[in-house]
Each structure stands twice: as structure tokens, then as C-alpha cells.
Image (tube, rainbow, N blue to C red; front, side, top):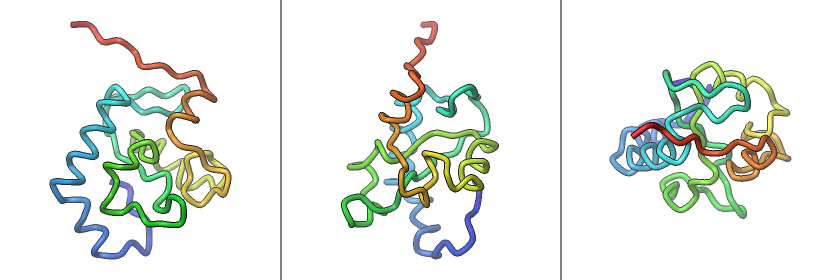
Length: 116
């Protein structure tokens, strides 16, 4: 997992909770177990990325199941790139950030059907 400086230990502990594991499963299933970054699509070294920690002025930490559209599947390299690029539409510090649905619309990404 890509570590961001200054994360609180309570937040780090929440990432090992059963609730967070369920969020990760649901997000990765939605994203077809692939990095959603346009042009990437890697299916290995996947990480689960918070696009934002606040929705409508309230923290979503611990309530992520209700805000899955603000959480994305990224490969390790893209996750690092998103965090290092303040203007990236999935960077949580970008005031013009977008959720997963909007990002996919902008890049016309559709779910790829897998072989049975």
C-alpha cells in the first residue's frame, strides 16, 4: 500500500477491519479487478484509493460502503502518480476531483467482460 505522510493511526487500523476488506472487494469487483486509470488496466499490485475523505462536508471514513463511487481501484504505480499529481482528477487534494463514475465517463471506460 502506498503510504501518505501524516495518516492517523486510527485510520491505518481501520484499513485492516472487516468492513474495509468488504469495501475493497466491492470496489475491485466493480472495477473488474483492474486499475481504472485511462490507458493502464493492470490487474496486479492493486490498491484501493480514497478519491476523497469528505463528501458534503462529512467524513466518509468508516462509512465507505455508502460512498463506493469515491473509492477507486488503482495499480501501485498509478496510485503513486495520482498522489504526486495534485491536478489529477482522482487526487483527493484536487478541488476539481471527480468520482469513479465521472472519471469513467470522461475516459469512456466500460467494464470489460471476462471469459466464463
